[in-house]
Image 1: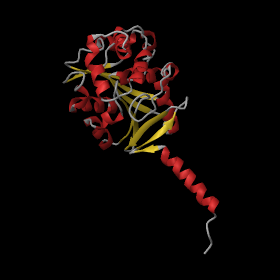
Image 2: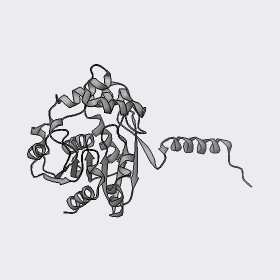
Image 3: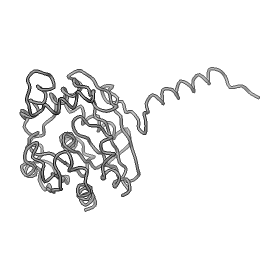
Image 4: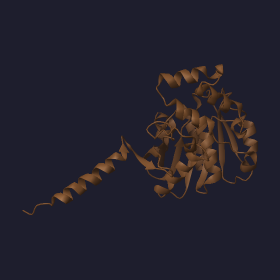
Length: 268
């Protein structure tokens, strides 16, 4: 029997080990433009939809939602991602890692690596802020759902963002964020990375939104009073739709009505 050369065995081991290092659980890692590794998962087949989580979250949060299950059953390819600084993705502690639309660029690069030429987006809370940047920056975006968000983030000096950053840094205590900071510390989340996400959280101006020609749906919980006016946001985006579902900021994305609104929008 012919023996396999030792060098070939070592070469196979080397490449298999490095391939394994790029996977975790059910997902994989994509190396972004600046070397940051971004964790993502892909489930199902069909038209691609990326789900973008909110502040302090991860892609796993979407996997517990009715929408995630229904999209896969409905014949969509569902992509979840841990934004940089969250979940299993890298958590750099330098300013440059979060400025200049870094999070949107991560997703754009990921779509390129997956050979995706058109896709839909569902963002929720801070995920809607990142979704809005993709809507502006990436021509491959088809339909966009912005859930749990009003027009507050369109102000580059949004007090809520500035106060959240100050509270996380310990520069000043704004009591509206006491529970948020307490939760972050209790879960051993990366405070420095989360603070930088607030410091460099992007805004999208009315002038940018005025040029949007792609379909946009804004979904708001009937009891959600956070993050500005959803009506104001709708007025900024030509042709956008506004839908209300039961729930507050923490619950609206989890119910059947939210899933149904997304499906109706995607299929109409």
